[in-house]
Amino acid sequence: MDKEELKVLIEKYKSGEATDGERAVFEGWYLKLHEGEGSGYAAHELLADADMVWVQLERDFVEVGAVGLQRGTSRRLWPRVVVAAAVSAIVFGIWFYTSQSSSVGQGAALATVAGNDIAPGSNRAVLTLANGDVIALSDSKAGVVVGDSLIYSDGSAVRYASGSRSAGSQKGSQRSAGPVGVRALAPTELQGADGKGQMLVASTPRGGTYQVVLSDGTKVWLNADSKIEFPSSFMNVKARIVKLSGEAYFEVFKDKAHPFIVETAGLKGGEGQSIEVLGTHFNVSSYADSGPVKTSLIEGSVRVRNGLASLVLKPGEQALGSPKGPLKVPGDAADAVAWKDGKFVFEYEKIESVMRKLARWYDAEIVYKGDFGDKTFTGSISRKDNISKILEKITYTQNVHFKIEGRRITVMP
Image (cartoon, rainbow, N blue to C red):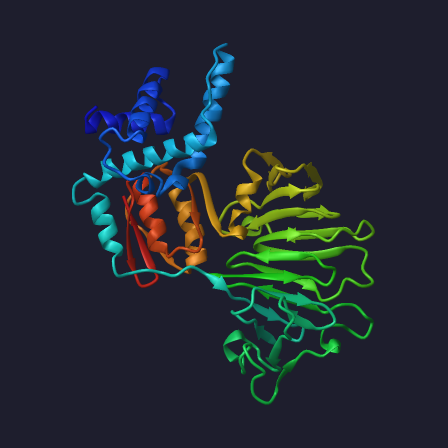
């Protein structure tokens, strides 16, 4: 099989257009390669980027299995380890093809990012008090716990300089006791005279993430460029209500007498969502530049409302907000929360959507030159990598090229 035939076969196999015979040829080629017949490549080289097309290939096998059943035929699905190895072979084939391209191919694309890179996001957030004071939370801590006082998740006190009206005016370091005037909050600064909590706002910048533990024990993970408004205490309230913009993952403390409600704004001022739960794990994405509000349920049950319409989600289901009410949509809810565990997971996602997510996490500006049509990207990538490594992986599977200049990334066909 020459290079051109192999390239065509890989593309058909990857897109799901290969016939049973072509699939058999490809699988036979892979088995020979895996057995070392003239491949010339070590196992670690073949396995280097297996995650890149794992999701796509797994879906292909599910679809093929379904078609086989409909036709009354049988098909033996490979064990997961063999499928993962086949993914590696596909990635190797795509790399082999693109590496042989002209100066506008992969080599040129990788050269443009050499010497330019952007580090991943980190723990960064600010907490705004009811009086307007702003506390720049420590970037050496992973989270903050709200109660009678403010402490970090490791038990150390949150200290700040009173009178700070913006993160930029913060005096004194959160890493130490700081100079005179830098102190911990008094309980009266977090609660009113009537015992009710003061409204607080925790927000992350582009390139930031943070965990917030609310006074009832509910855990909230904020993704980059996100904000949550909540009371410092849920005492003397009928329902625990918080407001979210951006994206957050919730693990709600169970309290049947006091439902937990997440309110979001709608796209461009449209209808938002109200998510009511008793105790559950779920993710809400409500970025203004990324389409309708999306709720993904991992555990328990939630009722999602848009206006007067509502629906109940079961674990694994997702709902999109719309003017006519929430809509259940297909998809893997677990993929929607992969960001919390340090991964990007893309499944047939348009390049523009992929780059929006990268821009938020890497605090980058994206510029497009050219038309990208309906090109999509599928893959699982670590959020801990520098952006150049991620762009290289996208280049491996799509004819897309990148140039990094400072924090600006130019995307080219």
